[in-house]
Image (cartoon, rainbow, N blue to C red; front, side, top):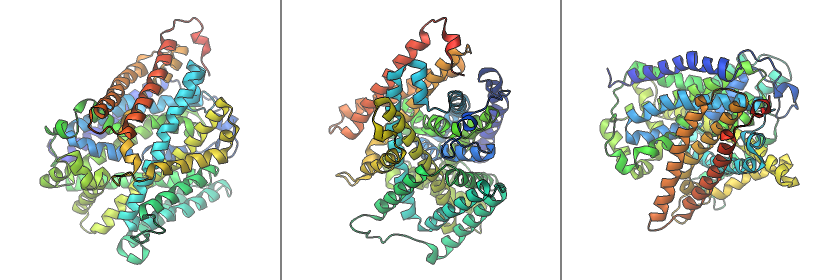
Length: 572
């Protein structure tokens, strides 16, 4: 029984269900006090038709869920199986329930109660102007890396699975039509979005089976640019346009459609697991993992990253979601519930690479980190493993169709994160412009252009033929979770000012801080000890660590200060 994937999937789902039923309810009623809060939200009181737009809770849930469920909760768990599926699965469950979901939920509530401001801006109110600026700089660096990485991931899948191009791009006009129907004609949104989803999935099957519906750039590229580089340029240009559009035009309807797609995709993967009931061919604990992938602490934890806890989620919660939610009563399903959904995706990714290959095939992929990269990387491992599971459960599906289905799901996740990250970058640049009194940064067109096009510098190939962002990517896991630790610090300060218990956020924040400082410290030590120090890794590692430690110091000073004024100082 314990060697079957279906058993462990059931364990994970039961844990998530119990967490939502009891722990999330406790936080909702007694710590964050949302369940009976009818105070008008910023979406209602500050409505501007562009960013602050009061929105149906199901549409907001779709936006938030798909924005946080990017490629990272697939990549992280897929790599973490190098230490064995047991430690990876355990950290996903524990991390999601007690840290990740609580982090997302509390960040959303804190932002709504601070006029929809970002966590960086809120830091200024809670601990001072200097930490606010440092926090915003940290956010800008992280979103800059996310934009370059996710655009590159989507581009590589477009090149490797050309049948995915038509379905993904067909979704854009379909989403615009759904948004127009819902907001301008005041029609329903569920049925039109399901029709759009059906058309999109129909195009998946047709494109996979008909070469005439597969679109790709010439293999030799155009004007000296490779197909991948051309796609990255187009994707970032698309992000620039969507960053300027009102959220109701494309962002909300596309994310709502993608939320259904995500549910369908997850349901298909889990159904395949229960029908085929595959054996977990990967080892529960891979003894060689610590030698080839690094020490299990802290590397497994920062590698799983978004699969358990992601600081980026606080940027989504406070950057876009808090400006659309119409009632704090909706915060629990949107904040806590969406992270449980991401946990389900992380579990699916773990199962796909742990049970989707033969035992020999798994060891070929995971002999070392270099072997995993040479075989196509964790995304390809997920696509191949999931395709194998789908084919074993549904015998009528061809290899091309299975690969296209999985590629479209992954690209849809990454594309919604790309859209949201660009908008968040615009917000942060605008806040920095106001703080530093740099007028152009406060212009949304200038800020959008900077946000969308500066990541092109990170996709330039270095001397070894690898894009620059790949050299910096090892920093992402630690720094992303560091942002999560800092957000929990802000929430803890905020709860202290409201006279609430602190250990629900304080203890997870301390655990996360220890993990991430250890992860960044190990990267720095390794780079200093290497024969050829890679400045692309060393410099951002040191910079991010110093930024985080400075913010942490300022926050702890405020947190440990005994002030009679704290109870009345909280923003409501």
